[in-house]
Each structure stands twice: as structure tokens, then as C-alpha cells.
Length: 478
Image 1 (cartoon, rainbow, N blue to C red):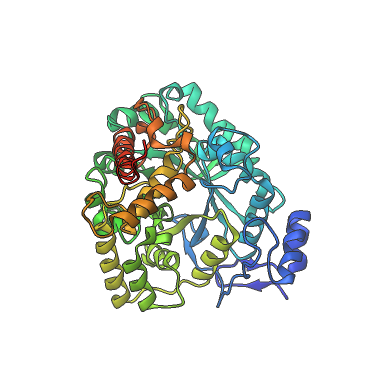
Image 2: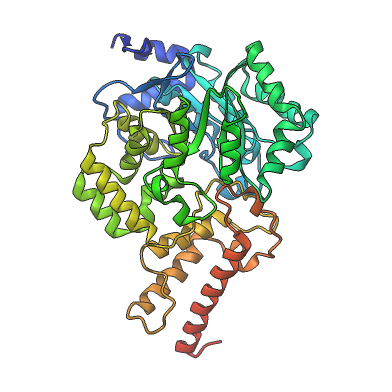
């Protein structure tokens, strides 16, 4: 196959060229691809992407061609999930990451998003290793000044974190640099000023952009809308802004969590200023891929298009907006990567009837009072060993499947109780369940969705205990 030049001046490599660039890792990938399936750890029967054309690209303010699909490096494949949560440096499956990154590049993905805080501090190093075999002009790297804790607020500590990103990523220029997670915390304005203004870090980053060590400067936003509006009104020439956008958060973010802001407003404010939007959480940490088991919502999507998965609907929605530069997706398995590549090669825009259908699905999903946990792992590791994301994930799944029934007189109470308890023990080891929460609150400031985690742990634990007590009453056992 010859080199294929697309309208954006990029090309998909032919197999000989690609293997030469990637080295042994890509060679192994190519061998598996020829066989038509993968024998790797992430799905032995995953088909190669079924693409009808080239990757869709959008143009940045500086004229860069950015793939509409961005590779999010927050959730990485592991050889041992529990070890990663404990902070083990050996938990990331580097070989699999190398293979996924190589395949993403082969199909035109050129935007990779990381942070010094992702994957318990390992994401930048892992990404740097995975990208090292490839020419520097074939990819764009986004990373962040993730100085969340007060010990990192000093100018010296913040600059040290910034400089370490170059070392870990093995690069000399950061393509996209973000002030990370502005708006988070109980006193978001104080945190914003302490992290970026009082210590002179925003001025420092602007100077670094002038010197060419940073190509594009922006920020990611969670939480207090006053900080978002303040940042846009500061007079800074932001190259981009990263926001959470999906078909639920477009109009219903505040219904899920009153401290959040609807994406319709965030996107609209960026459009007024001609600032490109980078999208995070297009599938809400996987909730819009699994639909939390909500059968009615899944049926609505299938009725509209039997061939599209829920994740593809969510990704099409995020990419549908013309002011979006790239859509980040955490692709921990090859199936995720290939499905996403197919969705954006090229993007099929949504029509009016499809947009109306997705709004109805959103309204249905909002009706189930699930917790807005996106499994970002910012709350981990818990000092007392809780697996907070898995606890919330199980709870949300049971709520959506209507296996969260508190009324003992409900006709479905017995089956729902069994499903909740059996699934809970299978999903979360007993020593990592909600009853081990001490209420220390260390996790709360780190949650982008601002969930009162200790409060929710108490509620879940009480519900679990009520289910167990009811079982004891029926069996007569203590």
C-alpha cells in the first residue's frame, strides 16, 4: 500500500514505513494485524478498524491539523489494577501502551493528552517511552501544570513540576500546555490565585510560550463557574480551553450536580471568543458506553441505529460541534481504540432527529439518580484502602438496572437485593468496600465532580447493611 496523502497534508503510513519508524513494537503489531486479530491481553478477537475514509482533522488557532480523536492517557492498561491504586510503579502495561499508541498513530491520531498526576504519576513517563520511536512532527503532546496540593503551589515547586514534564516525556517543546483543573476545591478562587497568579506561574508560562517551549497555552475547567468566567475575562490570549462536554452535560450537568455547569454555556462562551474547545469525558468515564446497564436507554440507541454502539453515539455527539478541536478518549483496550478510530474516520455528523433522540436519552438517564463519578482515579489511592471508583461504579450500575430497591414490599426486592450484594462482593474486595471509610475526607478536594465521597460511602454502606439484615431476617441466621 502506498503512502496516502489526505487533504490535511498528513498521511497514513504504508506498512513498510510504519514498521521502520516504530521498531520492534510496531513490527509485532503489524504481524498481529496481518493475521486479522490480536492475541494480546486486550481482546484476542478485536477486528482492525473498519474505516470508510481518513481520520477527521480540525485546525487549531495556529494552523495545526489536529485529529478529532485525541488519545487520553489518564486511564492506562495495567497488569494489576490494585497495584496501580497502591502506587506501584510496575503496574502499567508498557508493552500494551506502546502497541496502542503505535496503532493510533498509524490511523492518523496525533493528539496525546497526559498529566504529571495521571496513572498515579506514571502517565507522562509511559507516554514518553511509547512515542519515542516516532518522528517528533508526527504527534502533538498535551500535558498540564497539575499543582493541586498546597505543597506544589510555590513557584519553585511548580517550575520543578513543569521542567520534569519535559524530562518524563523526552521532548523539548510542549505542544499544548494546560493550567490543570481550575475551579476545583471549596475556595476555587483562592486555589486559582495561589496556583497560578500569586506565584507568577501564569506569567512564567506565557513567557515560555513566547520563547517557544510551549506552542499552545490553555486551561482545563471543572467546578466553580466564576473561575471559568474570570479566566476568560483576564485578557489572556488562550489558544484553547478544555471542558467536559457530552449529550447529558450539554443541558443537564446542573441537574446531576448543582455545583456543575451545563456544557452548552461553556461551549457558547468559547465560541463567542473564537477559542477552540478540547473535550474531556465525552462518554462520562464510560457511563455513556455502558449506559450503566439502562435497558431503556440502550434500546432507544439501538432503535435509531442497530449498528452503532452507545460509545459511538457519544463520540459523534462530542465531535459534532464545529468549535471542537479534539475529543479525548481514554482507550485502555484495543477494542476501544479501534471503535473510536472507526467513529472518526471520518466523522458522520448528527442530524436533527438524532440530536433530538440523544436529548431524550439524556433525560431518561438523568431520571436515574446515579452518582456523577467518572472513574478518573483522582481520589486514589485511598489511605484506608477503599476502591472508591469501583464502589461507585457498582452502585451506578445497579441504580440504572433498577437493582437498587430499598422498599422491602417491592415485588422485585428479593432479586434486586441479591443482584446488588452478589455484584458488590464480585466487584469490590471486602476490605476495600464502603464500610472501611473513616470519613477522613482527603479524597474530596481531588474530585473534579465535587462528590462528597465520605457522605456517599456512608449511604452506600447503610444500604448494604440493610440488605444484609433483611437477608438475616429471612434466613434466621446471625
